[in-house]
Length: 262
Image 1 (tube, rainbow, N blue to C red):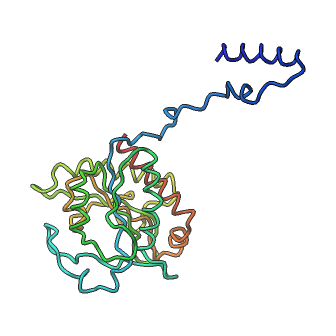
Image 2 (image 1 turned 180 degrees about the horizontal axis):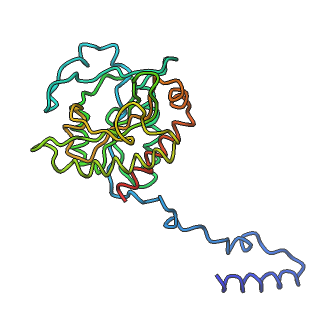
Image 3 (image 1 turned 60 degrees about the vertical axis):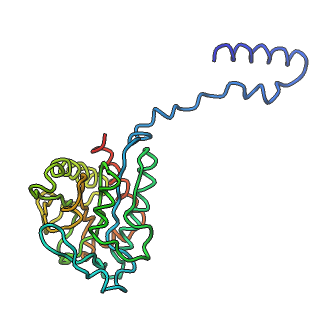
């Protein structure tokens, strides 16, 4: 850099003496050094990691009750293959909400170097079943699986909570502890990034453990469900319906995943 400046100074003096201007190419010979990509605190932070994003439900579920109501084995019993999900009082559907958040979250994680797998390709299909969604995470050998949802609780309840798998001896013994760490990381990042409080109607301190959800029971990888807010609560619904707030949700989830995987 010093040699370039010396040469440029000499050239400037010579050109001035001859009544000419310094050629443009020479003026650009020593531009300010660009910031090194390695200086970014997030770029490459998830290189080599695989994250599976599971946007809850699907846009075509309601039109195919015979398919989504089919019973499947979730270890602790049998449940419907999938459901239609909930909606706000204004008609904003949960499946559309989860798909939008997933679409915002994916490029953020990819920008950190992660390989990202979605459990469905669009918001127009049916399913896939909860068993298939869990299998996708297992087959991808995901370092983290995050299932995105909006709750449909009583209107007077509000806030978010993170659901973690309960212990099913002989099935998910190795998953419970890392799933709890993933849940704690996401809870912290989500609360800080969105400002939403912990759920006032379920769980404790924004956390809940369950053994009746197929997506959790059947996962062999660290997994959590995030109920991003209560879509039946007027205040939560207004936030979840706002594209700018959904961007905050995606950014917060990405931060929580990064904290866990880093």
